[in-house]
Length: 158
Image 1 (tube, helix red, strand yellow):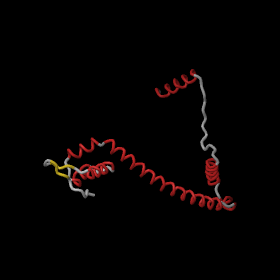
Image 2 (image 1 turned 90 degrees about the vertical axis):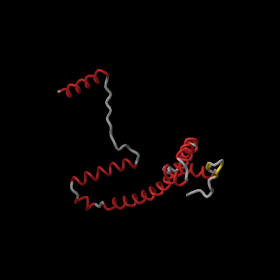
Image 3 (image 1 turned 90 degrees about the horizontal axis):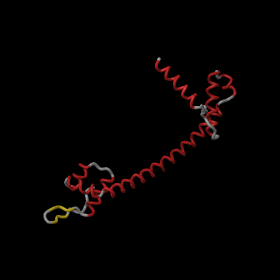
Image 4 (image 1 turned 135 degrees about the vertical axis):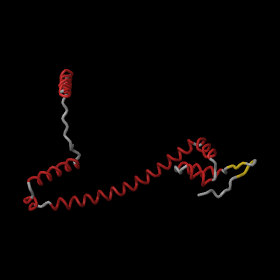
């Protein structure tokens, strides 16, 4: 990964080329560890830190671009896999429902029938956009609420 352009020497000190600086910024954006960048690019810690601090906004912008690309790639893969999986699940679901024959229902225990009915009901409601949970909400006035809290507190103190 080392840059093809050699480091320039100006007034007896090494100077990084624009290409080398770009390469280091890219390495920083890709979260390459500090010691690897220093070793691979043959730079000192001070040079590394100066580049990192002076180019923080550029590095963060590049990191965000990398994240967007990675997210887009994984989203595409996930969507493709999820679609294929959903299609297979529909096929298997039809096979399973077709396998529930009147004879099998006759031979099933009451417990098996109850569980099967419950699962089928939940899934049917889910598929048709109906609620699968039932919640009860009880509205009470302030005095009743305080009485409940006092009752609970007495139960805890006992």
